[in-house]
Length: 509
Image 1 (tube, one colour):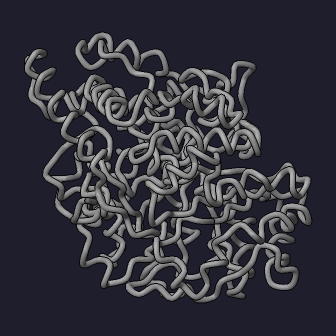
Image 2 (cartoon, rainbow, N blue to C red):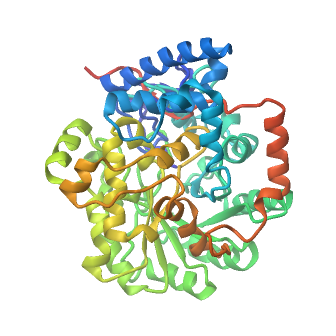
Image 3 (cartoon, rainbow, N blue to C red):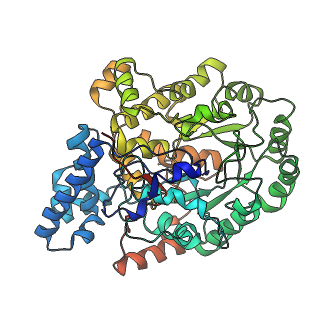
């Protein structure tokens, strides 16, 4: 996660949790700070209105408060029914789920043991005080271009950095979602005051969670920044003493700041500057290189170093370092000024800017070590242009293979990732897009394609042992974290539907 919004842009935004409407899924794009969120579209406003209408109707029939309904499995189903009414049949959901709590619970129980490994998560350290980081949660509350909250449960929550810290991370990731394992990340800065987590802090969180659970529930990144010499030196200790699980870097440079300058960018294929970093990764056997690509501000052309966030430097690096794995965060998705125009163009041509370039890498360069993390990219499209979200998955699978797409959510900037998990479980590529653009269906919620994306692929990258059915050998279902989650749910606690980040104040015309 990064902060790329200027002070001028922030004047048009608000925190997502300040939005006065609660929904189980965001109803407008929430920005984590890496892009200026578009306004709530007419379609998103329709979805929001339908969710509220359905919630009032079904909550009354069930004899429960509307808020309780919206936080239940039935409320989640109602949200996807509303999206289907507006966007067409993209999500697999039945009216019975929205009407009948037993039907909704039965549907939920079908995937209760699904293995989910989220490779893209964040929190900030306990003493973190830079309030510029709050913009993401604000966007998630509805303070974005579309004016629709991504997570309506955040609407009434005050804007406070505590919601980005460890306690809420544990709650959002492991108690309020079906996530099994998570990978903790950070964003670097030349200003120590703005660094979300240092290598030591990420590893401390990892070790704490794993001691608590008695299993390997959390993994940790170590930062790479080839254009800043001290980061190369720090890799030795990160690998040998801290034993980080993989590396994370931003080719565009410094991504944090009230007026981001993107200092000290680097290219993935720079022999002199970057390859010494790869040499150390290879030397220590920490072979997963995670790199932020795409997800630029809408006015990205105004950024002097914007091309460093493109995919033009990926292919050669992957060719030159076949023993390393390159995980491209956000799948390189380009943020569009005219998403509707992109949607119309895709319907005609089958092309998605930068996603096509990502998917073409294996064939163009003859490599098999490139992976796409879909953090933020899938979530943002799932609530704005569900057909594009489905198509993006189809294009990535077609080019990379279903075994090289990784589940990520960029949580907890937008609150609990459960709505994103439900979106992937339910989404299907519409038949007309399958036929027109030669895309394979995604299949059932717990079918081979979605199980691979949700966890099997990442397990192979991070040494998580699985049985022949693709389930972890480690007994996560009976560990201490699962026991605490059961107590939490038995006490009547529910997902809070709170979204963090930034949303735009106005609606589109």
